Image 1 (cartoon, rainbow, N blue to C red):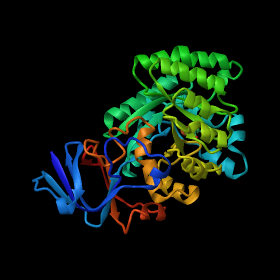
Image 2: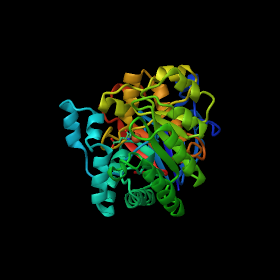
Image 3: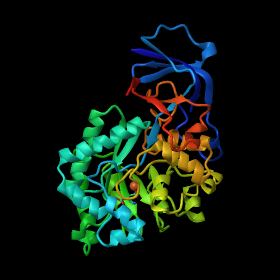
Image 4: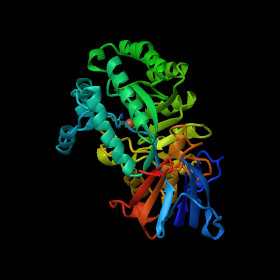
Length: 411
Ligand code: NIG
Ligand code: FE
């Protein structure tokens, strides 16, 4: 089955297959081909180039996209889209003056979502989660990481991970699963933190590994949640079961989580709203991808990740949504890209690199996703007729997506 797309106004993020991430000054460069063609064979990108060099091929389907731009699908490397219900009341409580921390301290926040999740059937959680997944696919996401972490019990965590697995079996989008049992200490273990960590290490992890339910392990390393020492212990246990760490760090405080992540060769360290010069230094010359979540900064009115300082230091940066019921009830990568440009002063080229190739790296799939490269998955966004790709962040409230392709097929 071959599909030939012709008259592409501009084809973005055209790369050799050796490029797995871009860092520092490279982030400002977005390689493109104007007036391009793209050939898809089955689910893969087979060829592309200038229309001037269009080979003579008879494809099964030919699509003319005159005036439209094509780019690889967004790679959203950090979400919590499997959850039950919502936290609208906490949203209004924050408008009325309470802080995210005060809400968590009164037993709301993550524990509120954990209570709802444990009271909801697996079928119902699947139904709610698939609606969110379908929504983000229509918004251009073609690969997504999804975390557990609202169970906080053996049954609840396994239930979430089974839902993630079922989503990955039923949808044509790449899904990576992350075990985040260490998201918060459940009420039952408030006075027995060691007991909960024992449960994660000795009960949850073996069961998850046995059933192959996760690719990565995550910990919320933050004051009032998991200390650096506890984070290291849990990363260590995850690594022993073959799960690479991807961790929540520096959302509210810089307590050494980045250094711990780098030490354990984490695939990514995510949030990074509060960054010291030492934190930036620690990431230099590491394999760990820093990931910013600007929609979370927007929704909670907390600082934005200092992208300019990080890029100036030569670091790579990825962008993701953090879609979750508490800090970011939005999975819109288009908004993330626009907000990164508007609030973090990333250029459109840097933001698109961060949301595609670097996002793919942050979930370990940049050999198959995140760029227009021969042999990579044909997961694509076709825009509406727009003057240039600057429109994507510039017209921040508009939906500029005409259609999306997953595995070479229009979704
Ligand atoms: O990434 N920071 C920790 N976890 C989530 C939010 C959790 C919640 O409020 O439900 C996050 O922002
Ligand atoms: Fe998160």
